Image (cartoon, rainbow, N blue to C red; front, side):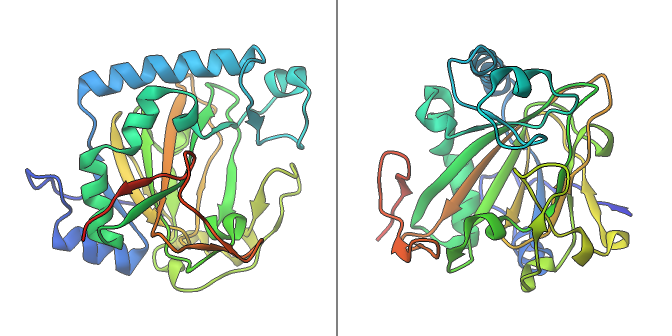
Length: 265
């Protein structure tokens, strides 16, 4: 196992050339702390409030550690919980604003160019002591988009390490598609574990307010959280306009749920 070093800060918003080269070589890059303490506290409060509403049945959410179900009691009381709220940007104005954050968009522009559209976002919560795992996978195995060049910002609201659910990556795995099967423990997740050489894995530890960015074909997973520390994470997935869904063979149009976040001539 390796632990990724945090890429050096540059004093400005865009990525350094070393960070850009590392992203295209490895399929991911660790940026370190990006959110200010004021942003972090605001987002933590809104995140917690939204999950409280979800647990009360007021907002739709899933527990990815159990089979797909609409039973609120099952989702709230399962022995393992990997909780997901999709499209926070349609629920909470602070997370809507985060999708338009200039600092994040500057980084994404360095990787996919100046025309940036939102694919979707998701809040991913591992509670203390019984946070469930997410198995090895490539995001595009779920999404089935073409071209497969979407890029994700994974942002943590808590300090993260391997024990409470930090992201783990296989460097260079974005260069080929691997097979996936249904996870044995839950029908909500895919698993490509048989395709993964875990001796190559890199654990990206981050401080609260930290960011790592990864390609939609980079193999990654997060381990269970058995610590007394919660792990609140938020992912924003970006694409270029003209991306097509291979499920429908239709282009993904600009909409409220998938707005254009930046356009340059």
